[in-house]
Image 1: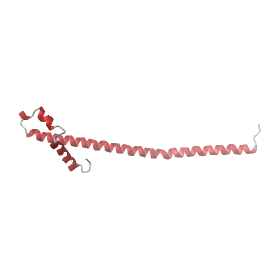
Image 2 (image 1 turned 135 degrees about the vertical axis):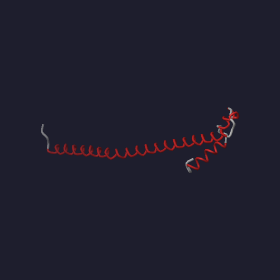
Image 3 (image 1 turned 120 degrees about the vertical axis):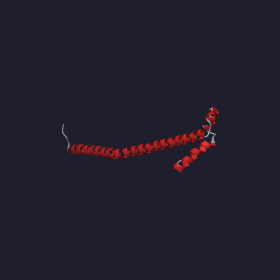
Length: 113
């Protein structure tokens, strides 16, 4: 089988185009990798900030509640502390308890609550 003069050039052209496509795809992958990594890094940092803020908020509310309960319990005689008193003290309808927590949050975390 004889190779004609034009066929040798066609094979070289096809090889060059294939090589160019391969190199372009490789460059696209190499450029895309840092972009993806920076996206995951930013998302991870945002997640960590949210978790930290949540932990601080929960600790703040628990600390405030503990001081409020300690203050309220020390004002009463031991015989006056019963189940009804404790349930009303911890009730969501107890505006003093809710206001104490809100004041603490506004004082130490303005604009966050």
